[in-house]
Amino acid sequence: MDFLTVLSFLGAAIVLTIMPGPDNLFTLAQSIAKGKSAGIYTTLGLCTGLLGHITAATIGISAIIYQSAFAFTIVKYAGAAYLLYLAYKSFKEKSSSFNINSDDTLDHKSLYKKGVIMNLLNPKVSLFFLAFFPQFINYQSGSVSLQMLIYGVLFLIQTLVIFTVISIFAGQVGNYLRKNTSLSKKINIIQGSLFTLIGLKIAFSQK
Image (cartoon, rainbow, N blue to C red; front, side, top):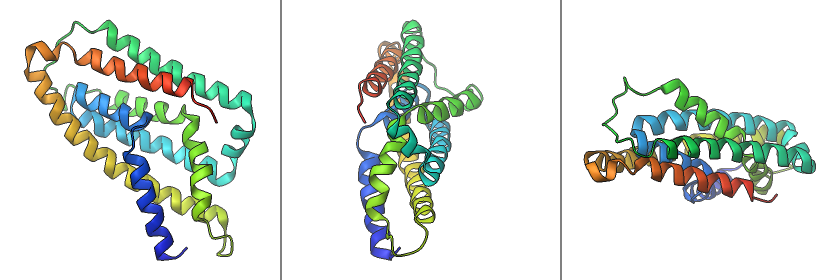
């Protein structure tokens, strides 16, 4: 693993992480609806889920899921169903207005758990690792599994940084919306719409 290869990997990883996808849209929705702290705790959960995908990719479990159409379908639809359930809860509370959330009013454990579940039930993450990481592996430079693990940790770190920045900026947008009485009542609708979009995107995704 030479420096230029690692630098190229980080550049590509940053671009891919910034592109709209289930995880960053999920973080965006939580941050707008509940503030930057909610987004950050969700991010911590998502990154914990990434650890599971990194481990799976490193030891080959992801490849097994990829080869099994049944396993891939089960995980995919479980993730989609979970997100549509969250969307239903948001739409159900659509008439509720928001107050500015303090850290004391947030259920940090629940937000963290949502992030973990959301990430683990998205099989596209593991399959992405299988497609993306090998392009930077040097098969003449030692253990492939170790290189996969190192790239996985680097990917996790840059994801943590980028999603935290997203949480901060989206939280500011959410604060503005909550201060506006007419707009504050629509935050749950915005969140529910984003959850629905992510859920459908996962449900109709292909390998």
